Image 1 (cartoon, rainbow, N blue to C red):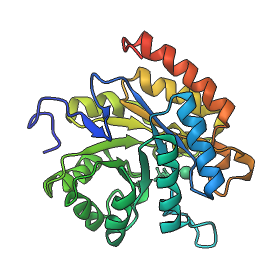
Image 2: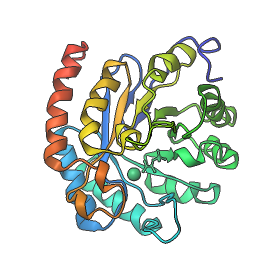
Image 3: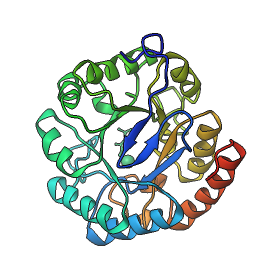
Image 4: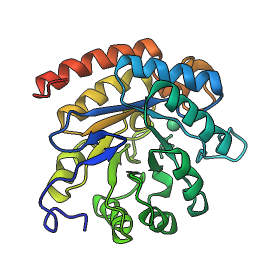
Length: 268
Ligand code: PEP
Ligand code: MN
């Protein structure tokens, strides 16, 4: 179902009126790694919206490596995200970690994210296949393209065709960056599948200074959008501060993306 051979026409996925896919101007979704509080998420929502983002990201259920770190505000975080979405007019994208939480996350989110660590959580994928809201499926950190597409297949097979893929870097021998951004998957996925493909340069690099160059590279490679972490005070962030852009850094990236969109032949 995910293959181009089966479905030659590129799929456009709509998230609250925002169209994502081939032929559409590439989109920018931005926001903090995690929702930390009301002021933080509303401030960020308004700042990224003013800069030109069309979607707000923020984790409420956080898949942290260790159990003693901040795990997210859970349902309280979803409510704050929804409030920030309303205040800014931006649709929201947030992670769902377990099949039991799909219904509660779907109540608040406009786009439901499956994190890299859950790419092969098959019960979660099946449950997401039973709803109609769009799903942002991140590539597992050691998943092959075939495994990545097979994971998307689980969602489509249950009846939900609204899937956007997201490359977020893979594990390699390199330790200078958090992950290694595998940009060639962008044109490759486009050959193999009709589903849209976005790139997350924040988790792919783990390093603030690398986020803008890799976001731009992703768009030149043909990505249908990027997902960028932005925090009002990255040094105080409860998670992923080192890879989060400041408001100023994000403004600068958006100015460059506007020019890049024109260069790529998109009006806005
Ligand atoms: C995230 O987007 O906050 C996240 C945890 O990403 P990933 O699953 O790609 O690590
Ligand atoms: Mn993060």
